[in-house]
Every structure is written in structure tokens, then in C-alpha cells.
Image (cartoon, rainbow, N blue to C red; front, side, top):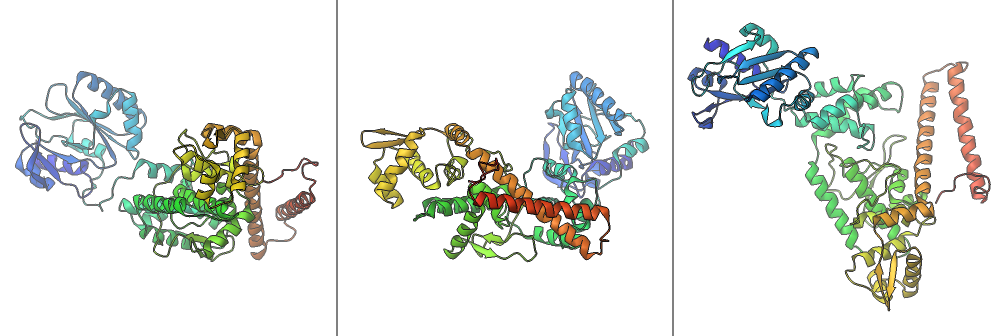
Amino acid sequence: MFESDVLALALAVVKPGGKARLLNENNLADDSGWVPVADAVESGRAFFVEVKSTLAAFDLDTPELVESGERVREWAEAEGLPTLLVSSGREDHRHLYIRTEDRDRVNQCAIAFGVLKSAHRKAIRPPLAPHRLGLQTALIAPQTVEEALGVLGPSEYDEPRYRERPAWLVSLISEGDTGGKYAGRSQMALAVASGLRRCGYRFEHFRGVMTNHRNGCSAKYFALAGGEGTEDPEAFLVRVWDKSADQLTPKQIVAKLDNVRAQIMVAPWRGKTGSTDRSVMLALCELGTTSATTALAFGSRRIAEVAQVQDKTARKALGRLVDAGWLIRVKASRLGDADTYRFGPEVDRMTALNSSPHIGKRTIWCTNDQIDNDRVLMHPVFRNGSGLGKNRGQTWLILKNGGRPMTAPEIAAVVDGNRRTVDRHLTVLAKHGLAVKTGSRWEAAGDSHCLDQLAIELGTIDRAVRQVEQNERNREGFRTKMRLDGARQEGAPEDDPEFQRQFEEHLAEQQRRAHEEEIRQMGLAKALGLPEYG
């Protein structure tokens, strides 16, 4: 065994820029710390290195693991993945290396074949490296150093130090936002850019990922390239990459939104519109958590969907919140983009690395018996008009958090409201099983499941769903119009049958919607079987 062979194999295994750690006779890391790989090889002692991301490594130190490892090796070779089997020193002890672009997949398959997670290694003694007790090490399959180097692949030791891409980033790049975690394709692109930056990659890597049509994350780039919107696709990539450089960490985002929520919950929201304004603020927090951002570039329709109010109600509330200093509005620079709202001038950075589950159109906002305070008023059951209303939701929330039965005057004092109004709220809540009176005192009744069931009975769930569906139709109509306008500007021939068909369908849809809106305003929607919006 030549020292040069040991060095070549070690450099083929070690991660970019990695070093080695010497081992003592007790198989513990030496106190000397990390040393250059060449120095470790020259010492003649046992050492280990951290494995590069394109290798899956396994320490098979029992007969059972060796048997399972053989099944993994057979599977890998059937999949076309190069493998290297090494005798690590002790009799029937083996190290197995598999070269792959998807280490997580190989590790999962190894577990399925019986190779326990404890045998998976991100740091290991390289092939032919000395054993701590002087035992003989050897290459088993293949048996030559040249062939082993072919399996391990080119050394990445001198390459830039890229961190291993986490599983969520690998999935987001290849498959796109399959779980609906991000507010849109631009936010998904920002997540990819942020993730690649954190792993040490450069703009050319980001551009390569986004311009590969096989990658699910590339949807926005190719939509722009296909004529959607007005932004140049290459300029879009530059803008997103630049934005990813200046961002808050996920923990900072969560802390900021938690702080805003706390301020919302303790602030006095007086007047008839107070509960609605608070719901819109909480909806912005929810959307911020969903997209992991404090730059709230969401359209009023999307905000209305989450706050469980009508679009025009959300727009009016946003205006009041800006006037009151709760929000700062940044006007959109391009047609079709939403205005951006910020909680304050000092919060001007964003991140899309981590996100909460997507708020789908059939989501029930309260999903636990212990209901989150900041989500109660966004439950469909407390919609204004078709539901019990935001103010009654506020009364129920006060009872829920009171810690003891409360009288109507006490509740009125908390909300700084009228006693008679509170009495009416309590009567309605009691009628629907959400409040119970004992003597002169009231207690909240019901939990999230009761709210869900009541929302179904009142039909507010369906109305919330119809609102989302109608908004999506409106968005698609706008996108269609933009595509058609773009086609006309580019000189699409007037006699092009496909162009004419799309244009006529667009006009017919717009006319149908206008006709339905006229019917609703006349109060005839229910009689004609058209959706009514609450």
C-alpha cells in the first residue's frame, strides 16, 4: 500500500476544502484537532474525513449489516450507481461507498434494506487508511486503486466550499412547490435563491437551476419567457438573486411576526370596524408566516380570503391601517403586481427559506382544541354578513380567555363597548352553543371542532371557498388579458384562429361576469341559482 494511493483515495472522499482528524487507540478523535489531509496520511495513523455530498457512506460492522449492505450494493448497481466495498480492518467489517447525486434517496433505500441509520456516515476512515490497531485494510470490489477512484469520482477537495443542499431545497428545485407552501412562483424562486446562497453557491448556479425546464422551480422564469407579464426573465433572475442577499433569518422573521401579533392582540380596536381591522392585520401576519416574509406583497383579494371578509372590506381596512400607522404601503411598480405592506420602515428585508403550511381554500383556521387567539377572528364562522360577525367573535374570544365567568358589563368594559350590544352578542352566541349563562355570568362554550361544524351549518365554509374560487377566476382572467394584450403588441395577426378564439372567450367571460354582478345587485342571485358572496 503506497502513501500516494491513500492520499488520492482520501482526497476523492473528503468534502470540498475538508480536513482530517486523527484517531487514537480508543477510536476517539485526537486532541490535536483538524489537520490537513496530507499531514494525516503522512503521519501513518488512523484518521477520518468528512464525506463529500456526492457519496453515501456506510459503516457495516456486524454480520447483519454486512448482509444488508450487500443488498444495498446490488440495488445501487442495478440503478446504475457506482459502488465501492472496502474491508475496514476487522474480520467481516466493511465500509460501503455509493456515488450519487441524491444521497438522501440512497440513505432511505439503505434503511429499507436494513442498514440502520446509525451505520450511515458523514465522516469515515477513507479506503486503505490505516486501522487504529494496525489491522489490514483492503479494497474488495473493485480491487484496484484506479477502479476505486473511478467509483468515488473526481476529487472535490480544491473546489469552492459548497454546503450540502438540504432535502427541502433539493425537492423544491426539482419538483417545485408541490405542498403549496409559498405565496407564488416568485416567492418560490426567492426560496431557491436564498437556499443556494446559504449553501455557498453563486448566481451562475442559480441561473442554471432556474433555466432548466425540467426543474419545477423554473415556472416563473419560463412564464416570463413565454410572454406573461412585462418583466424580462433574465432581469427577474438578477432581481431575485440580489434580493436574496439581504434577508432576515427564519428565526428573526418568526420573532418579528410574533411581536406584531402580540401588539395586535393587546391593542384596543374600537368602533364598528375595529374587529375587521384587527382581522386584516392578523391575516397579514398569517400570510407573512406562510411565505416567511415581512414584506407583505399580497393582493387585497388574498388578504380578504384569509381574513374572511369581502375584498372591498379588506381594501377599506388596509387604508384605515395605513392611516393609523399600523402599516406602510409601498405602491407596486408594475401593472398586475400587488402593493407591498410593511410593519415599519426598519423591517425592509425578507426571507423565503422556511415556510409554514399553505393556507388552502378549504383550510379550517382553528385545528386544535386549544384555539390560537390570533386565528379565531379569521375563522369562517365569524365572517361578517354570512357568519356570526367579527364583533361576536371578539366577544367569544374574551369569554374564552377570561379565565372565569364574566358578566355582560365586565365584557363591555373590556371592549370599551355598549352593554346592550354585548347582550345581543351573548344571545346570538348562546343560540349557537358558543356561550352558556349561569346566573348573571357567562362562559364560553365549544372548541375548534364546534366552530368548524357551525361554519358548515351556516354555509360560511362554502362562501369562503366560493370567494377563493371567484378570485382565482378573476386572476386567470387578468392573466389572459395580459397575454392577449402582449400578443397584440407583438403583432399577432388578427386572422389567427387561435388568437381570435382566446380573445372571444375572454370577452364572453367578462360579459358573463358583468351580467352576474348586475343580477346580484338586483337581489336575484339566489332565485337564479347564482353564488351569493358573504
